Length: 188
Ligand code: IMP
Ligand code: MG
Image (cartoon, rainbow, N blue to C red; front, top):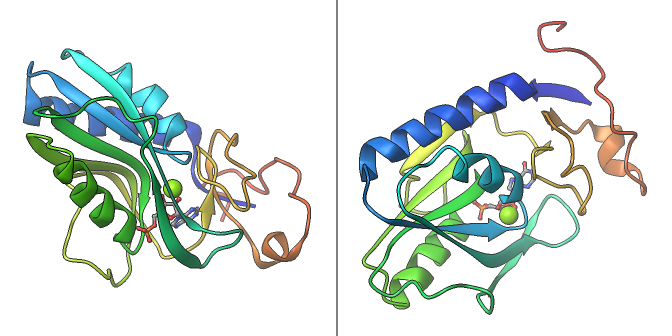
């Protein structure tokens, strides 16, 4: 597996993201709504860098059904806290086609949030399928399938502390590859 972003780079990116969010909201109360499961690592790191009065909710959305191509999007909001009249920041791991966040922004708006913005760790550089753009982005990345720091391939690799690119042989195998990096960043 090739490393795209090392642990320290990810940390620096999350700090930049927190600073952007702090600049937007100041000391105003904020409700983070994390899109499960991919944003779980980002949520844990990001929430500890924010110092305004903060509430945390989670929402489920899944479109990737056992692979790298998108299926029909399913939203699960049974575990969501009350967001009526709240300023909500949706937090997700990656903005790929944008369909997930576009749908969730509408969903949260429909539940009566006062405002809805979006923050993502990663923004894939590709043609988007929606007009929505994320409000806060830590990294622009090439259009490759990435795993680690919460992102999965068939529910594996979320625990990698770095962001890696899966190679064709990793995508073909039935069981996950051993969780180690092929090379350090900069090694080519
Ligand atoms: P979108 O709706 O196409 O923007 O896709 C967003 C969701 O797809 C994310 O929340 C991820 O769960 C998943 N996803 C998109 N690209 C990748 C990737 O490269 N690796 C792992 N998951 C991805
Ligand atoms: Mg996801």
